[in-house]
Image 1 (cartoon, rainbow, N blue to C red):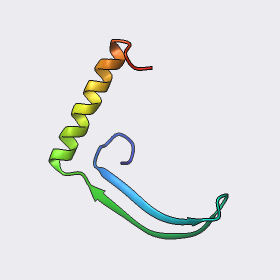
Image 2: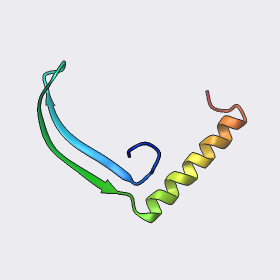
Image 3: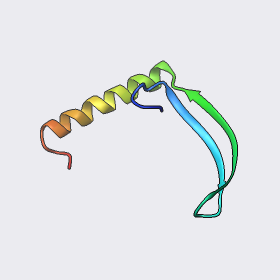
Length: 57
């Protein structure tokens, strides 16, 4: 997901030695389905409601 657009998931494969990137690999993008996007929006709305009530810390 880039930013808050909720369009999908950006993916990238990297090889690391634990401190630095050794090589960059393949990249891709998986768009969210309409159902996935609706589920995410509902979860965000619920989380905002919890925060507004002081239930989230």
